[in-house]
Length: 166
Ligand code: SME
Image (cartoon, rainbow, N blue to C red; front, side, top):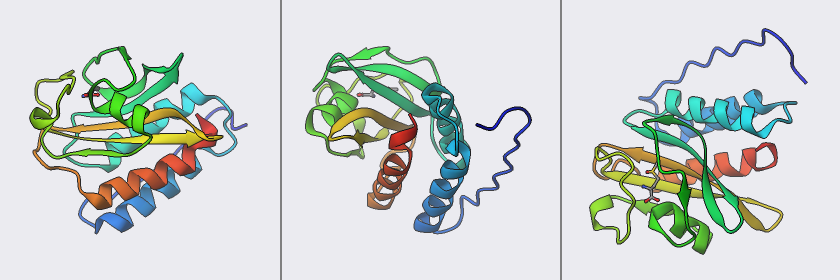
């Protein structure tokens, strides 16, 4: 377990092609959670890492599956709704279906929960462990259609990498 003054000097280049950016993000995440068993600490650092790596976000973080619904976890951005029922909004849809939700226009998504009125597009990726969705990673952007299939694939790779550490 790393104690004390471990420093991480990540230098993301947001202009590189997305697959390379996400490969770097996953590698940085692996370094960050290495040997650290505390899930809250890991989620907090991972939310900060995503925020640092990816441009044009206004929210990035975790909701955790608790008693069949979602409860807010560590994040970066404005204060957010705390509890989301399964099936409710974009995050609840990711929990209920177990599938990534790529939403180019949140206003067109039935039941979208507007935590931040600036949000225009959203990407929510379930984190699977032992055959169940233990959390979701939620990214919001003030840009319409900010996220595409490459972002979804990149965050899915991240979710797989960190599933055992949160
Ligand atoms: N918009 C999400 C709620 C979470 S906030 O965006 C942080 C939703 O519809 O599930």
